[in-house]
Length: 512
Ligand SMILES: Nc1ncnc2c1ncn2[C@@H]1O[C@H](COP(=O)(O)OP(=O)(O)OP(=O)(O)O)[C@@H](O)[C@H]1O
Ligand SMILES: CCCCCCCCCCCCC/C=C/[C@@H](O)[C@H](CO)NC(=O)CCCCC
Ligand SMILES: [Ca+2]
Image 1 (cartoon, rainbow, N blue to C red):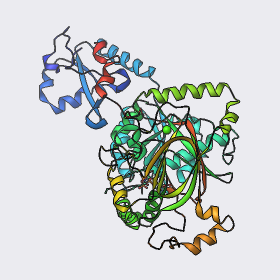
Image 2: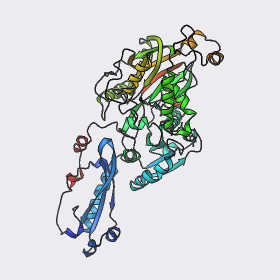
Image 3: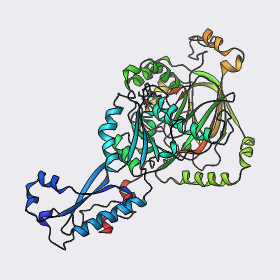
Image 4: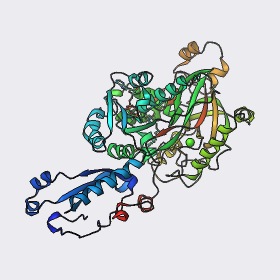
C-alpha cells in the first residue's frame, strides 16, 4: 500500500507517507476512495488497470493551535489488501471513545449573526465525514436551549454542542448542570449542596462576540478546530462556580464573574446589542471614561488544596499536573464523605475598600482581545478561582493596567492590584451594609450620585452589576463557591507544543 499516485504503482511496492505522523487518536475518518471521482478529475488514472484506494482524513496542526482536516490517499493494486487496511483502520477508530450522536443548539443571533452559516458550511460536513449523527435546534429565543435540555431524552446523546458565544455556552451549561441536579434530587438553592458532576461533554463552536471559554480551553477561537476536537472526542474537565444570594441560586460561572468595570461594560453594552461585537469596545471606552469605583467588603477562603499561585510564570496546559492533582484529591474526597463540614471551618479573610474592579476568574479568560487573559496562570480544573481586586487608582494607572492585558507585561505588578487564589468568596456592597432595609428604593434614590464626602471622587453610591459569563446578575451581594471539575468539554486545554504531543503516540506510519 502506498500513497504514491496509481499510475506509478506496481504490485508489491511499499512507500512511506512523506514525513506524515498521525496519531490514531487524531484520525478523523477512513473511507474507500471514489475512484470514478478521481478519474474524472485527472485523466492519468484512466490508464491503470483497476487500482484500489482508500483515503485517511486526519487532523493537521497548523500555527497558533489551529487544526485543519487534511487527507492522504493510499493506492493498492490488490483489492483485498486495500479492504483489509480500511477494516483495520476502522477497527482502530472504533476503539476510540468518540461521540456518535450529538445534540446541537445554534444561536442564530450571537456575535456577527453567523452561527447558522458557520455550522452548516464548516461544521456539519465534518460531522458527516466522521459519521456523527446530529439533532439540530436553531434557537428562537433566549433560554430556548436551556429549557429544552430539561425535556429531551439526554441519555440518547454522547454530547451537546452549542454554536454561539459565552452566553450561549452558559445557557447550555445551566441546562445540563440543572438537569443533572434535578434528576439526582439536589436542590440548587442550597449553596452547600454537593453538586453532581455532569459527564455529558459540551462542545463549543465559537460564533459569539468574546468566545473566551473556547479560546481559553482550545487556544484559538476557530469553528473548524473546535469541530475537530469534538469529533476526536477530546475531554477537558472544567471548574464551575455557583453564585447564590440569601440561599437562592442565581447562576453558575466558568469564565468571568466581574463587578465594577466589567459589570458596567456589560450593562451598557446590552443596550447596544445591534452593534455586534463592537458594542464591547464602545461600552468599554465609555466605562473607562466614567471611572466609577465601588465600596464593599470581600470575604474569601484561600485555596490551600492547590499548589499553584496566580503569580506563577507557567500556565495551565494540556495534561496540566496541577489540575490532575486536584482531580485525584477530588476522587479521594468523594470516597470520604465527612470532609465538606471541615471545609466550612477553614479561615475566612476579609478585605474592605473602594474598587474599580473585582474579578473572579475560573480560567485565564484569554480571548482574541486579550490573548493571555485576565489571569494568565489560572487553571481550568484545579478547583479554584483567581480573585483580582483592582483598588481605586487614577484613570492613567487603570489604563496601564488594562493595556497589560494585551501585552506580555505582568498585570498584577501594580500597588493597586491584589490577586488571591480562592475556593469561595462573598461580596457585600457598602450600600447594602449601610442600608440592609429597602435596597431597591435606596438604589433608585442614589443612582447617579457620587460620594458626598468628596465631590471630585468617583465612588459611586449606587451599586455596580455583576457580569457573570456575559450575563448580568440581579443581586450585588453574592456568595460564590468553586466546584472542582463539575463538567467536561470536548477540548484538551491549550497544547504546549503540538509536534511533541503528536510524536508520542502510535502513528499511521508505524502501522505501515
Ligand atoms: N434565538 C435567540 N434569540 C435571542 N437571544 C438568544 C437566542 N438564542 C440564544 N439567545 C441568547 O443570546 C445571548 C447571547 O448569545 P451569545 O453568547 O451566543 O452571543 P454574544 O453575546 O454575542 O457572544 P459572547 O457571549 O461571546 O460575548 C445568550 O445569553 C443566549 O441566551
Ligand atoms: C486600551 C486598550 C485596553 C484593552 C483592554 C482589553 C482587556 C480585555 C479583557 C477581556 C476579558 C474578557 C473576559 C471575558 C468575559 C466574558 O465572560 C464575557 C462574555 O462573553 N464578555 C464580556 O463581558 C466582554 C468584556 C469586554 C471588555 C472590553
Ligand atoms: Ca480554576
